Image 1 (cartoon, rainbow, N blue to C red):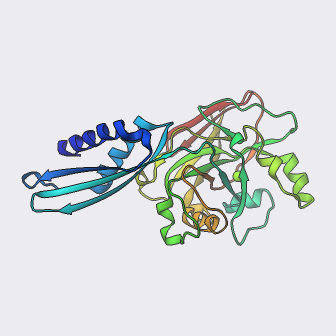
Image 2 (cartoon, rainbow, N blue to C red; image 1 turned 60 degrees about the vertical axis):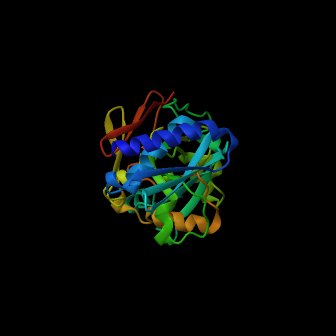
Image 3 (tube, rainbow, N blue to C red; image 1 turned 180 degrees about the horizontal axis):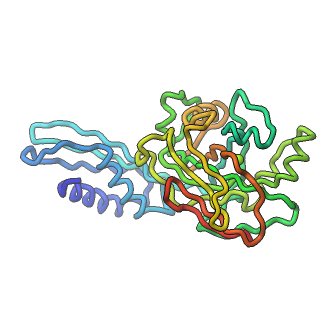
Length: 294
Ligand code: MG
């Protein structure tokens, strides 16, 4: 980013700081002298401004930014509209089951024609690498490492070709499953909720990686280690239903809202955890999640 954009962003941010409590749109206009015009890199500018604002206003608001540039006689003008929305107290967590072929085989399940969707309540979420406490109601808690999408825009009935506009970052999480309870419920064709949605069943990385940082969304490696040993390893090129398809499919039934999270399915290698285990999850080679079972 050129120094000009740094100045523009700082001016805008100082204006926003004084107006942010009103939750009304704030319009910032900055003009670039003709003599100093350079090629505008829209994504770089927006990304920089947005990340500054998110740091400044995190916990208070979601910052939504729209951007438009126009050429005028005086030079290039940049119109930036920032909307502040009060952060919702609750997110929804959607999850997709049986989305990697080899995992379907290891549990002797049928390959689905459409994504198998379930949800977890927000009380399932563990953040800050908090420990997972082994629940007393199960003797067979399994780990399922999964990539997690973060929804950045409200939408329903989203066409697959537009789906990528609705998620902006990818994190990693564990879909803990009380396999003993789930197996009994499945045998009776009953809902799985208590086997999947119990307290603490969704540890999620604090850091989410912006989607644009991945060269190819269909070639992302991720893995889970337990006590330093590789237990699960996946790549998004093995997904049965792509991220975009999942977004499109879910949005037929549920309005997706900013802040909602989607677990996208686990690769092969699921298995039990025991008290004392240390779980470490990575996207590519970046360690994003690390916690203990207590
Ligand atoms: Mg799962």
